[in-house]
Length: 485
Ligand code: SAH
Ligand code: SF4
Ligand code: F3S
Image (tube, rainbow, N blue to C red; front, side):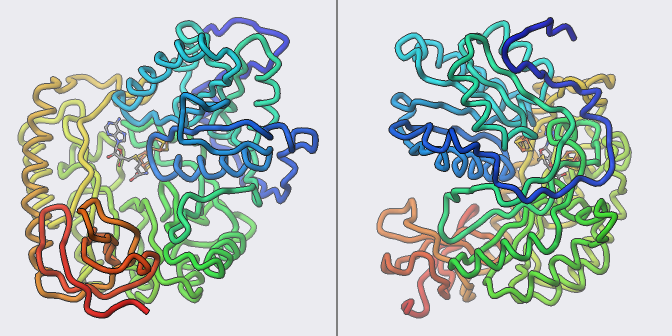
């Protein structure tokens, strides 16, 4: 790919060839010098706005960028039109996600004409794609700075450079660097927190761009994670969600201190925080030790998000998921034996290249056999540079759409059935805030179901017991059993 030569400013474009390379264990760095002293008051009197797309990983990266901006003296604003720095933290998972971002970047052209001093930044997973950076350079020269998912800690230095450069500043490392601990962070929620336990993904499912955009699997050290969760508990956080693309692979890369996800959860289960969730588990590495630790419950909730992607052995093989339909069903049975009331949710792709009607029917029958409570369902979207994109027999868009509609109809039925079973039962709800339903509050059960109920506003941020009176398809309505203290 010919990006050409540039000089004078940082120009490091992405490369899939280096993104694919998997190296040795990463180094853990404990150094907050990512903010040079001379930029510590750089943002005083200036505001920033971050638009976040994609998964929880990106939302959490945004929290780190917020921390970095605020350490430079910037203030957050909700008014994009007035912000001095505008950031698009992007997602590359499907084409639709990218189209939305390109549309928004296009709209920024007018704003940059009116306010040329505004700094426009594109970061996140799209920035790791070769084709995207090329397109930004040629079609959207009003973008000031592009940096990748491995360059977040470089934000202060790159921002300084972007203020003075005449050309677009591009710094996208395709190979991950060190794991940097103790970065400043400004979290968006006082009661719930994301905690990264690992970065990257080595699974290379044939449809997926993430191993290229997020690099190789790198685990944080168990003691750093435990310390972060302990600190959050002291701050009154009620719920922690552990993040990783494939949390079950946690610790395998830590050559000097071998660890496992089950062991990490065991350590975290002793911390006085009411709820610990995690996302996402890959079925391949979900072992008996993990089932056993989850069966102890306590602060480990009985909800597992276990993406299956397809119910057809042939499709699973071509997706390179490395399990069969039978192995997935056996795993579900083992989990249910240990945790009978577990709630299972999943991700499914329809219309993978070559998927026949019969193979799609296999997905429908698996969904019914497991009885998922809910699912994120997607039409397959080809991602340039991934093996599936160059497979034969792409399924026509209309057929993908039709399969998605039929799958969603089954999911709606299953979700209502599972919610109906809760009628009359008393559930523990963590009260998150005001409900979209006028005059009510809303919260989540341990199994992550949304519940609306009437209660005084001072109950926000507390745990309450709620009796379910009206199960709906996508949420529950209930009444409180006790006033909160
Ligand atoms: N690491 C997680 C998933 C991250 S991506 C896991 O393996 O479970 C979230 C979901 O997006 C995937 O589970 C998959 O269902 C979907 N997805 C990924 N790539 C896709 C593509 N090219 N087209 C459609 N859906 C895709
Ligand atoms: Fe993508 Fe597969 Fe990795 Fe999940 S496990 S991020 S679907 S490659
Ligand atoms: Fe999207 Fe990147 Fe997450 S591609 S789903 S933001 S890891």
